[in-house]
Length: 306
Image (cartoon, rainbow, N blue to C red):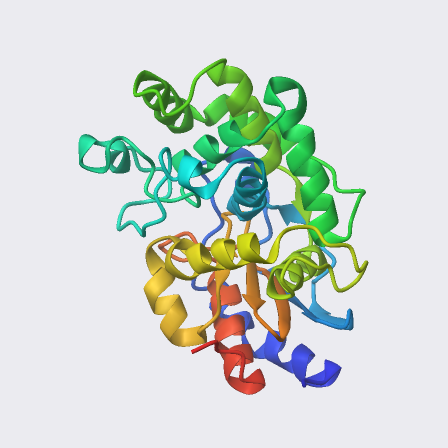
């Protein structure tokens, strides 16, 4: 489908785009990332993969973990119950918006891939404070075929110390009865999940698992129901790339989810998954080099679902 040499060439060709972005700085520890880092990994549905560039270098998963949280919430409660607390619609606001929680949407987060929606989704995961975090970590390990995933403690502490907007969002949701219980505990779990370290291969396997209807192509383990994967990918299409979701869909035609650590996970049903990492972000908070790379790969490998 694509050769190792061509994959390396594409990474080199897209290196210019990293200079058009800046690393995230609102979380102090993320500001230390290398803005020139760029890597990619492709995983097909037979478990065959190849990487190019700095694909082995780890970053924190950040918002990409919202897909795993949502999948676990879907597994733990009926969709109609979940959508009473979280809608599945796109938003024109930023990922950490409070506006989306206003009365016009009955105080519900607009979708599970913005911060409010992810926090509410985590609340819907069974197990409470004793088991919620581990359930999502276990699922993430199965999705990525990596049971050695670890948390970057420095990023976690940095996020926890500066996560004032997320606290405001969470306490507002408690006041409107979207969530209940110990808000600080729930936020602590959320910050930890966002701080899990991943590389391009982890993201590519996770994407390929979604594309394969929940069956991990590397391990053969069924991690999630096919219907839940379809729901997760459908929301990725409309909401996965923040305010750039529409433009990204036009350019690539791929369901994807990005994170401010610089990662992007793109799932192509029936074909495979791509994981890219480039910490230099554009104005919408997406990897500048990653988007350029995914756009070219979509054209060359005919990956658009449209």
